[in-house]
Length: 526
Image 1 (cartoon, rainbow, N blue to C red):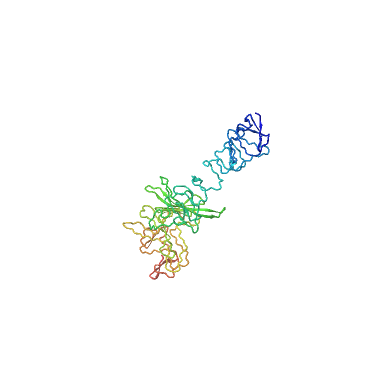
Image 2 (tube, rainbow, N blue to C red; image 1 turned 60 degrees about the vertical axis):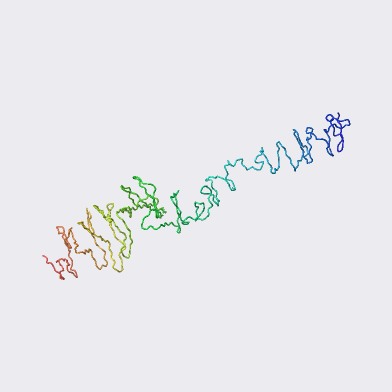
């Protein structure tokens, strides 16, 4: 059937035809079906009243509603091709979406979208260019975190607890955590409850109990008002270990390996003037030096000194048995006894500067003495005076009264009983004169200015015999018999006394005179 032109309202005749081969026409020239295909037919007005145009013929295959919704059915691809200056405008309201396929959006904003497993999106596409593609569970962290909010649940190693502005601590007796911020109060310390408080005994004291171990050197700096003072309870006269300062050692001694306890060191600093002048350390250390013994050890209290960090040298030792040594002027004095330092009373009384009180109750067969002076080596001086004992002081200068001064006072109590007959000597001078050019037992040669009464030697008791050259005198004055070498007595020639008294004897170049009963008698010379 030939193509049949169609005309009607809003059409341009001749621009649209009906393909009669597809749509057969009836006898009146009208199509026998409602399906038509228009070619080159322009609808310029009116309303389409025909049937739905199928997708294979360019239609949608469904009847579209008046809401401007275009629905296309069938397995057909739909392409909108816009050429030249013609634009395709999609609606800005309503819904525009596809069920499948890949689309590229440029300069579009997705408002509250729900996108399931998108692909092809990189962090720069969504404005996350600084986000690292790392799970927080494996993230190593960063030092560039500006602000860290509250961590509700976390497990942080103690080595990483470096936060510096924690005002409320969250550590407890069962959990590690953060300590509270410092209170900026030097009198308060963090106690075991997690609070800052002033310790018992005040801010300047320590509250230590049990055994404490120092992990390093501790230096305590005192000031004029901040000092360390030990105050103990009443001890009476009983010595209590630890009542005060107790220095000891926890290491036990072994055979040949004694253990010195705690050392108490006093250090000062002195100035040396020789080049190069400088300040130097001066230290004295005191400690107990054990001495190994058979039945029990003994101990020596030892004082040692060190100058400018040099090795310590012993200054003095005092044994528990009263023995010891004392360094004086570079010389070590060894003694066996107890030295008691009393109170010096310059105005008189029974005070003593030094009391030597040895215990000789059991001494037998040895030479014992309160003071024993033994020269460590022979004196070889060729000039000057060598003195074993020297007594000299500022002088005895009372202005009134009856004070008595004794340069040497020997005042022992002797009580020999039971047949004891040993000699008792106030002064026993028994030197060994191997070779002596001029030996004198006693020299009394005072420098006299004014003396009211002067005695060179005063022997008071009438039972005290004085012997000269004899060991057992039998008279008040008993001289040894004369020999060809010397006489028993010598009275050099002189002049008669101005006021002789009974008993005076003297010689002149012509006579021997004696005063008897108020009369001077002359012995006739033959």
